[in-house]
Image (tube, rainbow, N blue to C red; front, side, top):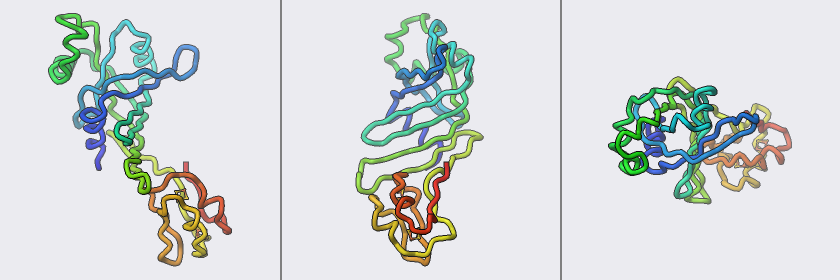
Length: 202
Ligand code: SF4
Ligand code: SF4
């Protein structure tokens, strides 16, 4: 799936997300924020100018977002920008419950933010014996392919496959190959490998 596919899922299917910023005490703070719109430029949400959350967004210009529904989860970290009242009417037209929370011209208390550059991950455990993992890149960001990888020291002993909970290691060739889209990142393969051939990339 593309980055746009994941943005669409975030807005249309999941909608309510947990957004993290850093508080004035230097510690993380989270709150539930609805993702209102998406397009090829990013994903849009809003908040009131009177909130501490607004101040943090303006100052930090960066958030972390996590959301889950039906055992499918999206996590993103990335850059945001304030676009003022641009798209505010479109957000209220699409998300009509907002018209009752902020009736009439009281919507003027709100401003819209766009997450325009972000990287993260999709994780699906709806079929627990066959989890699905994917990297996500929005805008100019690149997906970070962290996880476990088999290096050149592999001797094909197959011990890693014997302890893998997802059986996501291809041992049909001379060296083992981990299927990154189904790996739990549990590390059991690396622990048992007699050649320390499996390394974790952060
Ligand atoms: S346990 Fe290590 S050496 Fe053995 S097949 Fe797996 S990666 Fe290769
Ligand atoms: S990290 Fe865990 S799930 Fe991934 S290949 Fe190794 S044992 Fe399997």
